[in-house]
Image (cartoon, rainbow, N blue to C red; front, side, top):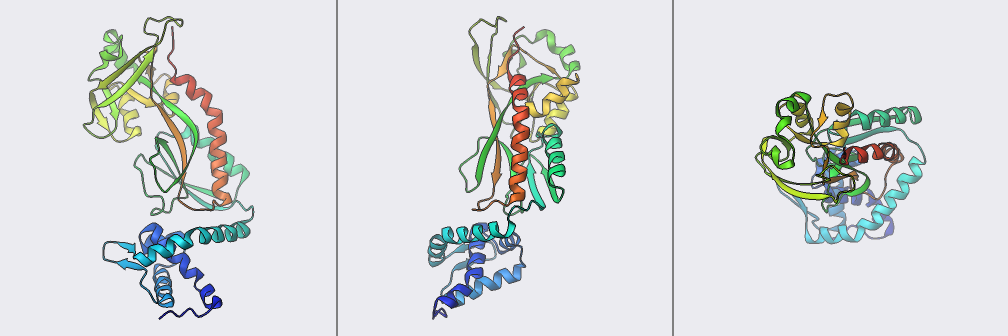
Length: 326
């Protein structure tokens, strides 16, 4: 039997309803407790209190998973929007315009110092009470489970429950170390001449298809030629950082992200290969947020700093990714 007799008793269960919603969204008591900043035991107790108050079972619990019952799913769907709006209003009133605390950011390794150094410096100057925790890696991680406030990701964003905002675009630069070009440059006049010389980023053993475009004859007035090439790799890696290091060591040719290639191109550690050709692949640069109706001011401050830095760098990235007609 339900213990809810009136509106006052129902109102007392609002914190318990928030706990239940967090468990449904994260799939575990541990992740839900981390999201709400409370102890796991308290989280479990709140959900059980809600079940007793309603007189129904809301969650299926096994040793491996937690999922809502049919009644639990219905309750979650009916209360999700108003609960999110209420939480957003309360948090907005509480936070006001304060920009302080910790922001945990997941970023891919190729977005190195050229992007982040100015962002970190600007935030330290504008918001001294704000602290960044940057976690660099090329593997996609569960933002909710890892307690990440925002992620910087590249590529095509799949449909998901995450909120993604496109803040820029970057391409690839075909390059190699000078020592590699000294040994092999005499035989490289066309993309097809690079068969078997590639250091590729991607799944190990995977063949890739790359599109090339360029004024192959060398005239800027010539119609652009296009080519799709199935690339066979000399080496395949799962890290942009390792791909860059192997290329710098003279192992082979790589299509490096313009973000990570530019510093080495500027100081001569890398040189462009087939400069009349460009790689006709682009990647979006995305800020990704966990699903939530409210973004704290401290997270908005980081997003704003990233957007401003990308606006400065975007023309340089675009120019580097273009074919160079000589």
